[in-house]
Length: 67
Image (cartoon, rainbow, N blue to C red; front, side, top):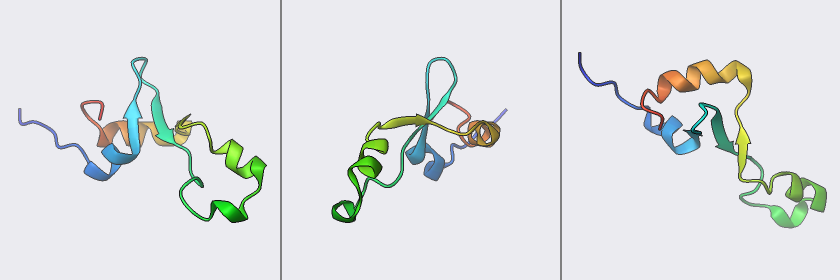
């Protein structure tokens, strides 16, 4: 059986935890921070959020070896 290819775009955006959850970096923290409120900036401060349940199955297909 041949090896499966990891989707490189998904590999850069997602990772798997030891328990199998899909982690991701939260959005809205890259640029234009001067125009955002403290609340907006603080909500994106946590680096590791978790992917939505509806997307997990698809993401795991793209990362066959855990990313």
